[in-house]
Length: 155
Image (spheres, rainbow, N blue to C red):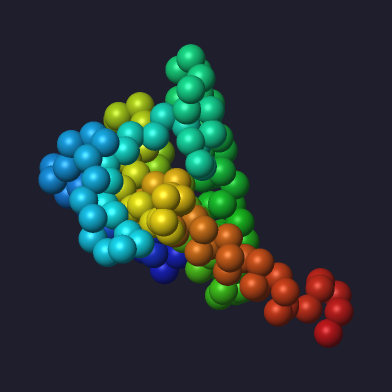
């Protein structure tokens, strides 16, 4: 389990360092064009994915903190039991690190710092961060692992 926790801690460290750097470099709402399809932008997201519930009255902060804490405990239990599944363990470690990276923001700032802005013409994908990327990659690895692994009891 140590290697999975090390991966999760690396995700947290990279996520928090990148958010700290962006928050020190940009002001909220500022956008810097990097390429024709990518900007750096500082955005404090009080909601969840795609700003879900961002316009709520403030209760969503506690709600998302509780959800993240429950997910953390559940993932830690799965990692403890499933460490023999390397791809599955990696997926869980990435999700754990991402969830905790965003949880830190939510606890300290009341919002998650997003700064990666991909776009095509005038259509912008919702801004996100490295923690979101780790969660997405972890979820994709879980799907891949479930598709390539035989069902329990079958060979």
